[in-house]
Image: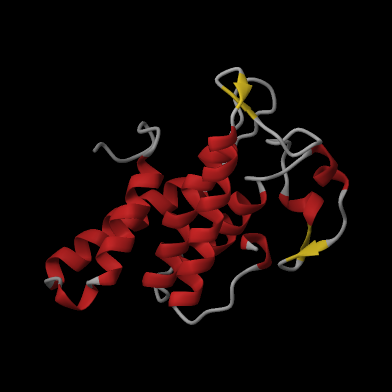
Length: 169
Protein backbone atom coordinates (compact mmCIF):
# COMPACT_ATOMS: atom_id res chain seq x y z
CA UNK A 1 0.00 0.00 0.00
CA UNK A 2 0.98 3.60 -0.47
CA UNK A 3 2.04 5.34 2.75
CA UNK A 4 2.15 8.99 3.63
CA UNK A 5 -0.04 12.06 3.77
CA UNK A 6 -1.71 11.37 0.46
CA UNK A 7 -2.89 7.93 1.53
CA UNK A 8 -6.25 7.84 3.26
CA UNK A 9 -5.83 4.73 5.44
CA UNK A 10 -2.07 4.47 5.78
CA UNK A 11 -2.21 4.91 9.59
CA UNK A 12 -4.53 1.92 9.92
CA UNK A 13 -2.37 -0.33 7.74
CA UNK A 14 0.85 0.88 9.33
CA UNK A 15 -0.58 -0.05 12.74
CA UNK A 16 -1.37 -3.55 11.49
CA UNK A 17 2.14 -3.89 10.05
CA UNK A 18 3.70 -2.62 13.29
CA UNK A 19 1.78 -5.00 15.53
CA UNK A 20 2.69 -8.00 13.39
CA UNK A 21 6.33 -6.95 13.47
CA UNK A 22 6.23 -6.36 17.23
CA UNK A 23 4.97 -9.88 17.85
CA UNK A 24 8.03 -11.37 16.14
CA UNK A 25 10.49 -8.53 16.60
CA UNK A 26 13.36 -10.68 17.86
CA UNK A 27 13.10 -12.85 14.73
CA UNK A 28 13.45 -9.92 12.32
CA UNK A 29 16.79 -8.95 10.82
CA UNK A 30 18.16 -5.58 11.98
CA UNK A 31 17.66 -4.02 8.54
CA UNK A 32 13.99 -5.00 8.57
CA UNK A 33 13.59 -3.70 12.12
CA UNK A 34 15.06 -0.38 11.02
CA UNK A 35 12.74 -0.29 8.02
CA UNK A 36 9.69 -0.95 10.21
CA UNK A 37 10.78 1.80 12.60
CA UNK A 38 11.27 4.21 9.70
CA UNK A 39 7.76 3.51 8.31
CA UNK A 40 6.06 3.77 11.72
CA UNK A 41 7.98 6.93 12.64
CA UNK A 42 7.14 8.55 9.33
CA UNK A 43 3.42 7.83 9.68
CA UNK A 44 3.34 8.92 13.33
CA UNK A 45 5.16 12.15 12.50
CA UNK A 46 2.56 12.91 9.82
CA UNK A 47 -0.25 12.30 12.31
CA UNK A 48 1.47 14.44 14.96
CA UNK A 49 1.29 17.41 12.58
CA UNK A 50 -2.43 16.95 11.82
CA UNK A 51 -5.50 17.73 13.87
CA UNK A 52 -8.05 14.92 14.17
CA UNK A 53 -11.06 15.61 11.93
CA UNK A 54 -14.64 15.78 13.12
CA UNK A 55 -17.89 15.06 11.34
CA UNK A 56 -21.35 14.81 12.79
CA UNK A 57 -23.83 14.54 9.93
CA UNK A 58 -23.58 12.04 7.07
CA UNK A 59 -19.88 11.23 7.54
CA UNK A 60 -18.54 10.75 11.05
CA UNK A 61 -14.82 10.80 11.51
CA UNK A 62 -14.96 8.52 14.56
CA UNK A 63 -13.62 5.47 12.76
CA UNK A 64 -10.96 7.48 10.93
CA UNK A 65 -9.64 8.93 14.18
CA UNK A 66 -9.84 5.53 15.80
CA UNK A 67 -7.87 3.77 13.11
CA UNK A 68 -4.96 6.20 13.59
CA UNK A 69 -4.61 5.27 17.28
CA UNK A 70 -2.93 1.84 17.00
CA UNK A 71 -0.09 3.14 14.83
CA UNK A 72 0.58 6.03 17.22
CA UNK A 73 0.47 3.81 20.30
CA UNK A 74 2.69 1.18 18.73
CA UNK A 75 5.21 3.83 17.72
CA UNK A 76 5.58 5.07 21.27
CA UNK A 77 5.63 1.56 22.78
CA UNK A 78 7.89 -0.13 20.26
CA UNK A 79 10.36 2.75 20.01
CA UNK A 80 10.28 4.49 23.42
CA UNK A 81 13.76 5.99 22.97
CA UNK A 82 12.84 7.61 19.65
CA UNK A 83 13.05 11.41 20.02
CA UNK A 84 9.42 11.77 18.88
CA UNK A 85 7.92 9.06 21.14
CA UNK A 86 6.49 11.61 23.60
CA UNK A 87 4.83 13.53 20.75
CA UNK A 88 3.35 10.29 19.42
CA UNK A 89 1.92 9.52 22.85
CA UNK A 90 0.35 12.97 23.07
CA UNK A 91 -1.04 12.60 19.55
CA UNK A 92 -2.43 9.15 20.38
CA UNK A 93 -4.31 10.64 23.34
CA UNK A 94 -5.62 13.44 21.11
CA UNK A 95 -6.93 10.96 18.53
CA UNK A 96 -8.45 8.75 21.25
CA UNK A 97 -10.30 11.70 22.74
CA UNK A 98 -11.58 12.76 19.33
CA UNK A 99 -12.92 9.34 18.37
CA UNK A 100 -16.09 8.89 20.48
CA UNK A 101 -16.81 12.55 21.24
CA UNK A 102 -20.01 14.59 21.41
CA UNK A 103 -20.71 18.31 21.35
CA UNK A 104 -21.13 18.19 25.15
CA UNK A 105 -17.49 17.13 25.46
CA UNK A 106 -16.44 20.58 24.26
CA UNK A 107 -17.83 21.97 27.55
CA UNK A 108 -16.57 19.16 29.80
CA UNK A 109 -13.93 20.26 32.33
CA UNK A 110 -13.31 16.81 33.84
CA UNK A 111 -9.69 15.74 33.63
CA UNK A 112 -8.62 12.88 31.39
CA UNK A 113 -4.93 12.06 31.27
CA UNK A 114 -4.06 15.35 32.94
CA UNK A 115 -6.06 17.66 30.70
CA UNK A 116 -9.69 18.84 30.68
CA UNK A 117 -11.85 17.00 28.16
CA UNK A 118 -12.69 20.31 26.47
CA UNK A 119 -8.98 20.90 25.87
CA UNK A 120 -8.69 17.61 24.01
CA UNK A 121 -11.89 17.55 21.96
CA UNK A 122 -12.14 19.59 18.75
CA UNK A 123 -15.76 18.82 17.82
CA UNK A 124 -18.35 16.08 17.69
CA UNK A 125 -18.22 12.71 15.93
CA UNK A 126 -21.20 11.25 17.82
CA UNK A 127 -24.74 12.52 18.10
CA UNK A 128 -25.96 13.49 21.62
CA UNK A 129 -27.51 9.99 21.94
CA UNK A 130 -24.09 8.44 21.10
CA UNK A 131 -25.13 7.22 17.66
CA UNK A 132 -23.24 8.19 14.53
CA UNK A 133 -23.87 8.58 10.86
CA UNK A 134 -21.78 7.44 7.97
CA UNK A 135 -22.77 7.00 4.35
CA UNK A 136 -25.87 9.01 5.24
CA UNK A 137 -27.27 6.36 7.62
CA UNK A 138 -27.00 5.27 11.25
CA UNK A 139 -24.11 2.84 11.04
CA UNK A 140 -23.63 0.34 13.91
CA UNK A 141 -20.48 -1.13 12.38
CA UNK A 142 -18.79 2.28 12.51
CA UNK A 143 -19.66 2.52 16.20
CA UNK A 144 -18.16 -0.92 16.74
CA UNK A 145 -14.95 -0.35 14.84
CA UNK A 146 -14.38 3.03 16.50
CA UNK A 147 -14.56 1.31 19.89
CA UNK A 148 -12.43 -1.55 18.67
CA UNK A 149 -9.47 0.68 17.82
CA UNK A 150 -9.50 2.13 21.36
CA UNK A 151 -9.61 -1.41 22.74
CA UNK A 152 -6.61 -2.29 20.60
CA UNK A 153 -4.71 0.60 22.19
CA UNK A 154 -5.54 -0.68 25.67
CA UNK A 155 -4.35 -4.14 24.66
CA UNK A 156 -1.03 -2.77 23.35
CA UNK A 157 -0.33 -0.82 26.54
CA UNK A 158 -1.13 -3.93 28.57
CA UNK A 159 1.10 -6.09 26.38
CA UNK A 160 3.94 -3.59 26.93
CA UNK A 161 3.35 -3.57 30.70
CA UNK A 162 2.49 0.13 30.62
CA UNK A 163 -0.52 1.81 32.23
CA UNK A 164 -3.53 2.17 29.95
CA UNK A 165 -4.37 5.86 29.47
CA UNK A 166 -7.80 7.01 30.60
CA UNK A 167 -8.51 8.11 27.02
CA UNK A 168 -8.41 4.47 25.89
CA UNK A 169 -10.78 3.24 28.58
